[in-house]
Length: 318
Image (cartoon, rainbow, N blue to C red; front, side):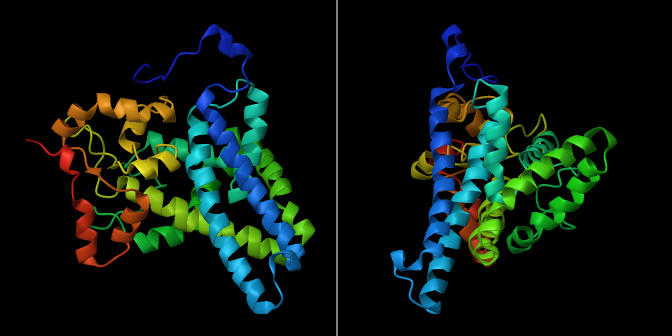
């Protein structure tokens, strides 16, 4: 495994559909996400199958479904498609292009727009031009957790994407054509039942972007500083809870990912172990839990927020 390029393909891989065998997990997760939406639509249209007998039971079904669908949608795009944007999961460019289009529309994103946004994040990380991250207060700290998650999508993203994509002569045609494809796919549930689409399509996507992807982006870099020779490992936080990383495509190894974006997501734990001494010596912020508990801490009062600064016991300088 190279430090920046991941595992080199072998000759026989040219005849494989997947670029990396572990990416089968990515495909299964995405297909399961679409099946979950289709199942929710089906049960909404056939309420007796799930015991919906009145307005209250329908409201309970919609609320529960919207939260769960939003949760898996945020993971599917913010983590799962994120991996695909760095290393294409198929050997066929055609399959990558069209699978990507069917991938992100389930969380209200054209794939081209999401990839462009993430390119900005990696290229401008923690700089003034990285408009994907929280805004800075006068003292240089991030804005509040609550304000960021409520305002970043779609409002801030819409402003910047319009400025950098739709209004840019060299990108306008591609952006508009990709948006047209997205709109055609995204509108399918409205053709089935507009009311159902609002509750089981739009609302879950709001949850996915605001309460899943938003908190993830916040905790990944809060308290961090831009990479410099003096502070080379202080640009991202690392989250080591094993269960979290096992179920979230190793997204907790975020510092390693930013420094080595072409390393396959399945190989990040191994890379982390190789870099462990470097991380300790450089004072990297390593936490023993995952994003969910981190979000709980950062959404709390001042006392609770201070606990986010705690360091994993195995990553302190001796």
